[in-house]
Image (cartoon, rainbow over all chains, first blue to last red; front, side, top):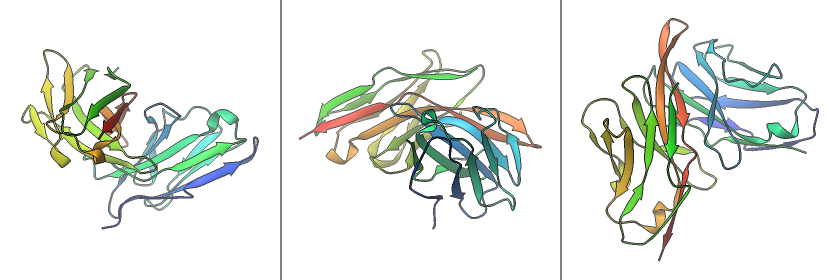
Length: 112
Length: 119
């Protein structure tokens, strides 16, 4: 079956610009997570959605980062006024409850 | 707070020899533990998971891991390495949270171990 998909696979932007990263979870999975993987590091938790609501956003680094999941399926991670330090691979995962999280291929964001 | 330490950033083995990737964890209660593998330009793939059943966990592609509570370890092993095993491996602990009316798993990843397999 279809896994988690993320678009775009690569995004290059200039410092100060706004970007949106999209995640399409496995059909029927109610839980959706965003993680960020900086170069040479393991992924770090950003935010968790249960259905349409952001139940835990404690990992978002600052108020330039925001995520939505308006219909309880597709999610968009939004980054305002991008900085060079935001360059990383952004990973999305979905699961059914506390079961195994299945990851997408990620979006590689480069801020010039 | 929970944490994961992968003791080796790089491991190099010859094809056909055993693989050992070491992981120690810290958790305030009985954890769920995972190993994920990441091939270049590919997504994270689950190798195996421990969730308080048998302490020896078998995963895909011949990998297995043993949960040792007394040593707070969850080392990953494979008897015979293949070239296709070359990748980065992450040890992961799950913190069960409760928010929004449901429980969920918040993953904490180790720094990763890059496995190189020589012919």
